[in-house]
Length: 117
Image: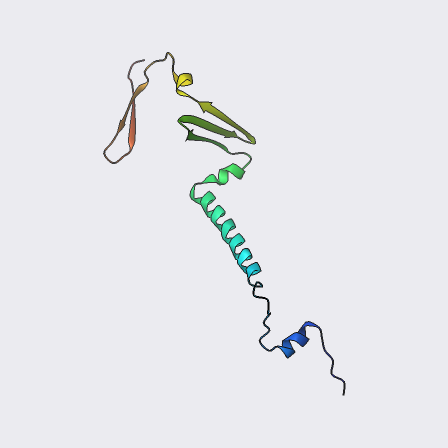
């Protein structure tokens, strides 16, 4: 009687543990796990900082950040994104007092507008 062999199953029959002799064969699995971890980390950071509005085409948002002592204002209005650098020289000028801001003991801020004008 003739014994038939079927490709990959032959190797499993010959080597019951099905192991590969290549010690680097597990590295591909580690790279896949690392990629899934990185994508999961990015998604959780977007959710934690509520940055999912960056991907919404109708959303409007403003982000203020400080870069090397200068303030940078990033405004997203729909699909248009605009970044403006504001220095102390640009912020100086004539104006009028609008009110007073107080920091309370618990760290919260309270703004009281001036009465009258």
